Length: 360
Ligand SMILES: [Zn+2]
Image (cartoon, rainbow, N blue to C red):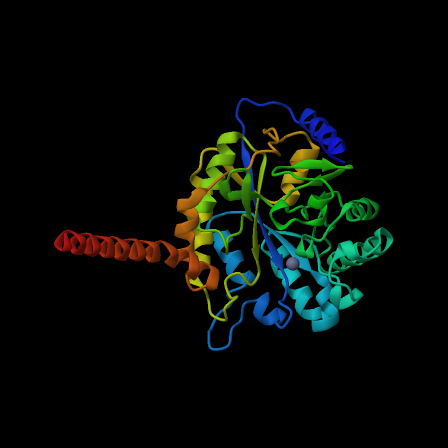
């Protein structure tokens, strides 16, 4: 499998012309779906009890528009079985009406009874993909070109099924999530060709490293700090990577039941940073794939390059996300706790030393 991967990489590199002015393309990708106990109203539109306004997809669209930026929205269409067709159709229309990129996201559970794509045979996956593609075409007149499996649960059967239904871009490889494609031998942090399908892996970085051990983390507007996002973008731009594929969800701003301005401000700041960066260009998956097919990408893939953010940024993130779970609290308080323990230890040693001196 690994030999096939390297061969595919070499073939892919050869297909892209070398350019003296390399660009790194930033793909912001938004998975549009409801949480298991949620609803499209709350988790897609972002309408919250006790708050006026919309803090989901409409707010994300506004921030994109303010920054003249592009993004790709992967929509889970299979929720129509649970929530009805109208609400999901309207969100699809809203995204397309704002000239943003709409593609297919597969959480097949509501319609087909199993959690992830990799739990189905290739022929069943083909049926699921065909249904999703047909629904999006019916609602928007758009032929989707890209797919992301829910929970990144896409495998090589998914790749085969995608080809059968005429979708030639996939974004289900997430090495930081140990996704099925990763377990099958694909470990890339830039675009690769998998059996004729363009794979756009979810970008990841090493937050910590120690004697061969690495702690991987995928790049996400919600869970990564602005400093981590900037650091990874800078490193990959400097390296000349082709594509940086950043995650977020339609509910990233509303996950805790209130409009989380930290996330919306971070998205806005990140888009401004990309727009001002000399080596970065925001694009969407459809435009990127078009340029790829027409050999117009001015970059060479760096699938083996993994940025490293280090201890300081990891620690600072724990303070930034202090209220988002016990792990952040433990990490954030670890340094002050160690300082206190160290200071108390020093005081005790000092007292004992003085006592011993007096006794002698
Ligand atoms: Zn999802």
